[in-house]
Length: 250
Image 1: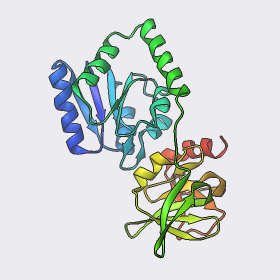
Image 2 (image 1 turned 120 degrees about the vertical axis):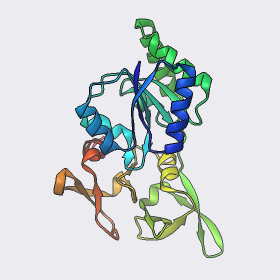
Image 3 (image 1 turned 180 degrees about the horizontal axis):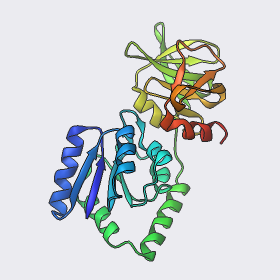
């Protein structure tokens, strides 16, 4: 079996390789890819492997953007620290979904599922998708934010965008008020409803109802204009253009 790993954390990729070889020494790791751009380039220029182990959160965005650029026909086993993306993972020919830190039993299960893929196993996947759909996903409706000597509830419905400013996380409301958040952008991305909020790039999360228009930008990118003032132009990479277009009109 020939495998490719898509993982931007060096220690995580090394640990996964060691665990894979411990479980099945016959598995050959063809390449370890660390970004969306590198992955797209690799899949465009190499034969499709037998299986891909893919982290969802990469340094340059969500790995789902890779599927917008290249067709990956082999089974995919997703790895992530968050479980919010399980359903979306199964929409792109995933056969399993492993939560970090990955343990040996879960990896054995995933590899065995790959080896024994049949019509029956596909039915099991459909059953799993149905069970995920039936589970209610909870997202944040409010954040407690500091204001002078108090903590006040800030409704997510009032947030137009969130951005990083000198390593500080700031939420800007439709009333043009700014509040500080004590979470990272990655954490916030998993806590906000993806139907209402979009990770535009490494610096910005934007609210769908704040989007005024999209402008075609250089290099196939998109510039997003919001209904409120932003400190800089919000640029979405070419790899995420299809994703944001679908999100705006969903």
